[in-house]
Image 1 (cartoon, helix red, strand yellow):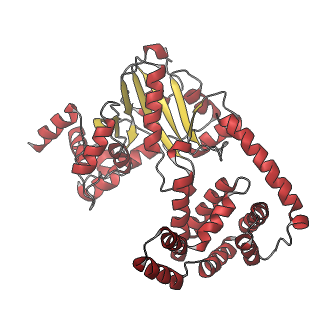
Image 2: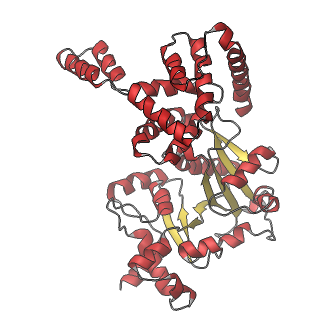
Image 3: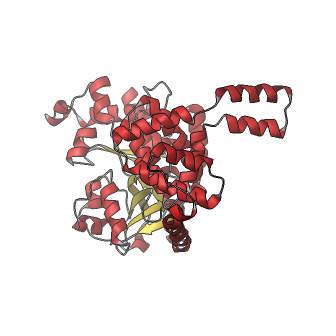
Length: 421
């Protein structure tokens, strides 16, 4: 499927590059002044000339340093923002004469003109990927006046990166090296320290990895998840990722553990791919390995230590000096994961918020589960298992957003009851 799209895209990009070479001869002047280049893109009516001008403008934008980019964007905002006088006129017209024409006029006048500029830039070679990088740069400028561009691009990306366009691909040791290098670079949960480390996660048949790709960005994953196929629920991440473990026959596996999920594109922050990815991978694995009957995560609890120091209070020093019992740690962790201190009543922990909102339930809490420096500093090594029951995951999702009650296993319910006494 991806190779089919890559063939189409290669043809489109060849044509775009050819048109760009012919641009100055066939379509008039390509301005070196970036603001005049914008005017060329916005004023042209021909599809081919629009493509040439857009490619030229995007090249100019990418060459700007941060100060010049900031200045350019503010000029763009001033010149190509909403014409409020026209919008008010169109609203008044629609209020007295509601018809398709007057509605279209409101739709057109209520959208900033720079949104159309981004649409035209998107048609260039690798335009979608380049706009994702541009949004990343805009966010890094950290200028409140540019937030309109941040949210405007996000709204466009929500259409362009609709889940129905995404392609699920399996990543293994035979995957091209340029993509494997990106897996190492983008891994955000459990650092990959070497090619041997990566091989241990991809080469064995009981360790698998899946990624979402977009047809317009075929060589760069959007998000990926690493999966361990097991015949029991592991109690620590060390059991999962250590190099000297014993590989099992995947036909004997009854449990799939999602132990790391990493977003790859900072320019796509605000778009949730993970909820679709986990469910799709679970269904794919179940289809390939019918004996799998449990789908769980082994998840970090990144906000736990900070929360305990503020609300418990349990400090990292107390834990380190063994002045905090396992029972006290377990009690406070379950409270943190199941009771909200937020104004929106959502789970305290960002990872918990994601999985519970995705329809999973809190299955188990594991002490001493991540003894890495990062794991100890975030949660004193405590990790959680979230259960994805494919038969009730959608129902759980709907119920949670109605009542904001975290669904839990009988084990967690029993522990809560014990601690409440």
